[in-house]
Every structure is written in structure tokens, then in C-alpha cells.
Length: 236
Ligand SMILES: Nc1ncnc2c1ncn2[C@@H]1O[C@H](COP(=O)(O)OP(=O)(O)OP(=O)(O)O)[C@@H](O)[C@H]1O
Image (cartoon, rainbow, N blue to C red; front, side, top):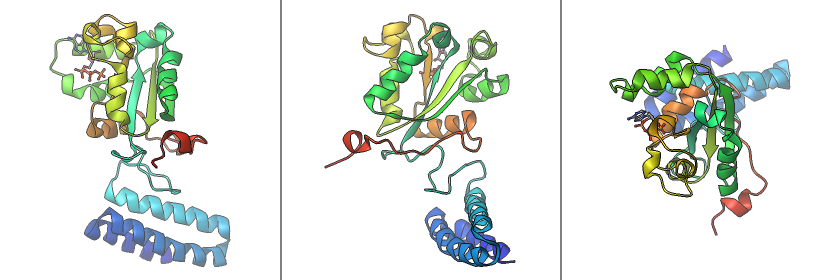
């Protein structure tokens, strides 16, 4: 009964007043709910109910999003802040050529934080959706086959940090490796556009779409604090 009341209140807040008010309402109402439930059923039940309520509110606003109850950051991060996130992939040619560790190392050394990582052979449906904007191109079928035929897997990653979407693209280098400068991943390691070993989201919209597409299972993105954040992402 109480949970239904709280959920309804929060849904109304989410739809009428937007995310900020919903988040405030969620925090106030779920604190009340948590205290009531904790008194009656114990702390574990109260905690589970509070997490469910939080997820319900966010889902009502944005059905495909996954958030974490601890800090309510969407899995695609917060563009324009130190929590900006991008999707970076090592494509099958990069995996075959043993370049995974080098690509990861470049992002790590720069100071970016790895918050999602998986190795998979993507389905055709996933590759089709990922490259949907290229579906009319003559190379589309070959591109999807190269990504999905299983001759090597893909490494999917989510990296976090200031300006990581733009800087990730800079680090990758031009899509066509013949135009990629030295010091970039493509400029250092590849020669042709069909085998350019890596991918990076090209905008905040793409990052949101791609992170949601490749990740999104519960627990696949981890919010964590690096011990050296003070030395890497602080402002004076
Ligand atoms: N002319 C082409 N011939 C073959 N493959 C191509 C061609 N143009 C693009 N591709 C492939 O399609 C991918 C996506 O192309 P797009 O134009 O979206 O560039 P991009 O966004 O820089 O690349 P990516 O999405 O891989 O980072 C390229 O990385 C490349 O693998």
C-alpha cells in the first residue's frame, strides 16, 4: 500500500516536474518508506524496497535506462563533466593483431577511467543497430560481417573522464588511417579504412545510444572512485 502510494507520487513528479524534482521526491519519499519498512520488516527488506522504488521512478522517465541507486548516474554518464562517458571498441582486426592492451593502456595512461569492459562476438542485430546510419552504404554488409563473423571477438569498453568523447576520437585518429596523424592509434597501427581497428562514439548522443546498446545489463557499468582522482581530475 505504502509502496504503491510512493511509486505513484514519484511517477507523477517525474512526468509533471521532470527529473530533478523526481529525484528529490524519490529521495524524500523513499527515505520515509525505508524507515517505515525498516521498522516493520527489517533493514534488508527496506533497502530492497528503496532500490526498487528508485529504479521504478527512473524507468518511468526513461524506460531503457539503467541507473545505480548509490548516485543516480545514468550508465552513459553526464556529458560535459568529469563523469562524461564514451563507448570505445577494439574491432576484430585490433583483437587479432594483439592491440587490446595498447589501446587500453593509452586511455589509462591519459587518466581516463574504465567503467565497463566486455569481450563478445556481437550479433548481427547489434551490429546493424550500431551502424544503422551507414545502412545504405555499399560497404555496410561487409562491415557487419567483419564485426560479427566470429573470426575474432570485439572488445567493448566504456571510458569516463573530462571531454572523453571528443578526446577519445582524437586519440583514435581519423577514420581513414591514411589521414590519421602519428601518435594516434590509427596513425600508428593501421593502413586502410576497412581495417581501422577501433571505434569511438562521435557525440554525446552516439555515446548514449552505443553505451545503452552494448551495455545496459545490470552491473555491467561500475561507478568507482580512483584513488588518484585528486591528482588527475581535480580543479584548483
Ligand atoms: N569507404 C569505406 N569502406 C569500408 N569501410 C568503411 C568505409 N567507410 C567507413 N567504413 C567503416 O565503417 C566504420 C564507420 O564509419 P563512419 O563513417 O561511421 O566512421 P567513424 O565514426 O569514424 O568510424 P567508427 O564508427 O568505426 O569510429 C569505419 O570505422 C570503417 O570501419
